[in-house]
Length: 404
Image (cartoon, rainbow, N blue to C red; front, side, top):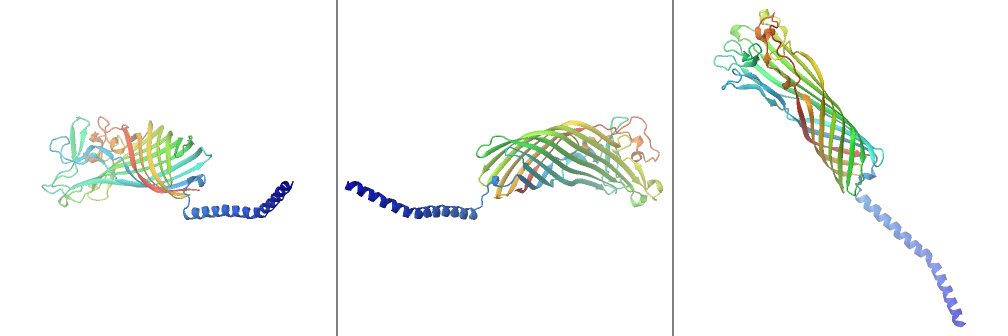
């Protein structure tokens, strides 16, 4: 009986002691939790997270581009020092490809995530016009090299030529120049496949536009030497091409994350229509027929004559694949720097040098006959025919990507 009462009294005292200490225990637990939160906040403040997923759904990018466009072909001799095809004849202009070197441009891109697994993206890139060329000249003095424009005579089918310089009567000079410009745009939808911890794969489908413009110009001057007067004899042959591609495309892109670093690789193929355009023009400006007075302009140069001068258009099926690789580093949760490489190809494009026909009926040309009443007699050459080929462009890019 006494032991039961003693046990009861001890239990009551224990309960009173515990009740007295509960506030202290609760205060201690709260103190520990708040301290942990504060410690985490301090660490976060000292080293900001670069978790891209904490940013918003919209992405914007701006990149500087340095690309090399495939050299522009000029697959025929334009100026020589003799009859083309003979063993000792040198080709001075033409019969090679002209390079414009590194073309600089800009690419702007944007994307919007509709859901965690789908979104829209687009980009626009542009390269401004860039030119390159070569030139040759002869003084026309005794002992100087005579410059020749070689051609195939349409009436005989044989090699022939006309002089740009003829010692000791007139001097001569010629210059060839190629100019190019490239731009393109895309609009795509993307669908994300089930991602792993570090890897993500997107399917891509959409529309692509591509435009390539090129011009090849041959300019010549054949003025008389002072002893024979003061005449002007300038010709211009201009071949300009435009290629506009419109197509649907599909592709796949892989994305890999490792801390603040990431890498992307994509392959896309577009199928569609390539609208080809060719403009050919030529002229002769001379005062030889006015005794050194006002200059006159006549249609036709040496390769651009009445029978092929004009505008031509054609549409062909084309394929445009692209491969792109990039590496990036997230400097903040909303900003990253990227460095990459791209290779772009387009089939069935027209390039200006390939549109030159060197089979010539000279009867129609004042530049050849020196007859202001010249008119076509016989076969209509040079004629025009679309000659298309492939084209590639490749280069590097560096830029900034923002996500908000």
